[in-house]
Length: 344
Image 1 (cartoon, one colour):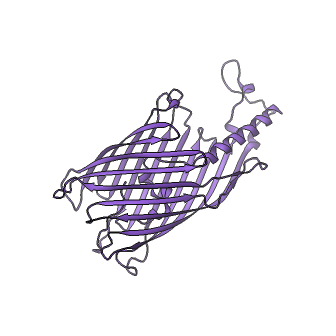
Image 2: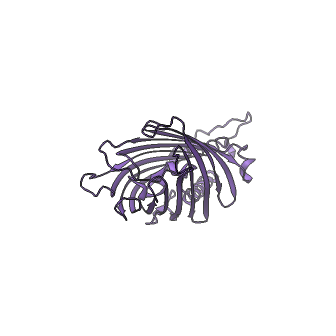
Image 3: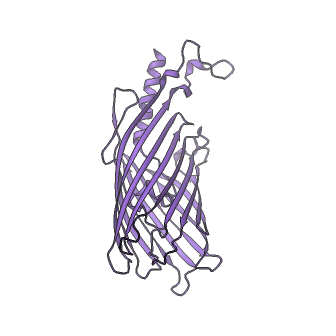
C-alpha cells in the first residue's frame, strides 16, 4: 500500500513538473522550429537541416537531456514572387528527464508564408502554423524507494513486488502559431521581431487516469539583429538577440550577443568565427552562457556551456549544461536574389 501511494504521488509530481515548462535551448536561435513556427523556411537557401543536443545538470543523474533534428525548406519557388517565401518543415524532439524515468517525444509539421512589403524584399512579414504529436512515457521500473535499500547500500526489489506494471504512456495532439517581421535598411544588416504561442489548444495530460493537468500555453517574444561594424568592410559583424518566454508561472529571459569575423576574407565561401555570450534569467539570475561558433562551407556549428550562478549551483556542483548545434543549409544555385534573414 505504501508503495502504491508513493508511486502515484511521484506520478503526480512528475506530471506537474512536466506541465510546468517546455524543454528549452540556450541556443534558441539555432533551433528555429522549437522557437517560432514562422521561422519555417526563413533562411537563404533551398533546404536546411538542423540538429541540437543539450545535457543540463548532468551531475544530478542526467536531469535533462534534450535533442532535436529538423528539416525545412521552401515550396513553389518558381511560382511565387521572388521576394516571397512559402516554407514547410518537419521536426522530431526527444527529452529525457531524471536519467530516462520520464521520456517525452514529439513530431511536428509546420508551414509558414512570408510576404514582402517592398519590391526589393528588404522588409517581410510572415505567419506560421505547427501541429505536433506528443508521446510521454513514465517508467516506474527505474524508481527506487526507501524499503528497497539494503545494508550494503545497494537496491533490491522484493520478488513479490515489481514495478513492471507501472510503465505508463500518454499522447496528445498540439497546435502552435507564430508571427515574424524581418527587415533590413540596405541588405547588409538585418533585424527581426517575432512572437509565438505554443499549446494554443491547451491539451490535457494524465498519467494516473484520474487527475488531469492542462498544458499551459507558452508565449514567447523574441528579436535580434546583425550589423556590420564598418560600412566599407563587411568581414566583421555584431549580432545580438533576446527572448522573453512565459509558461504558467515559469518565466525565461535571455539576452546576449556575439561578434563574428570572416577569417578567410571570402564572401562567396566564407569561414566565419563567432564568439560571444548570453545570459539567462529564469525567475532568478540563472546562468552565464559563453558561446563560440563557426561557419564553414554550408555548415554552421555552435557550442555553449551554461555556467550555473543560481541557488542550484550547490546541488549541480556548479556544472550547468553543454549544448551543441549543427546546421546545414543547401545554398541556391538559381541566381535568386539573397534576402537578409534572421541568424541569431
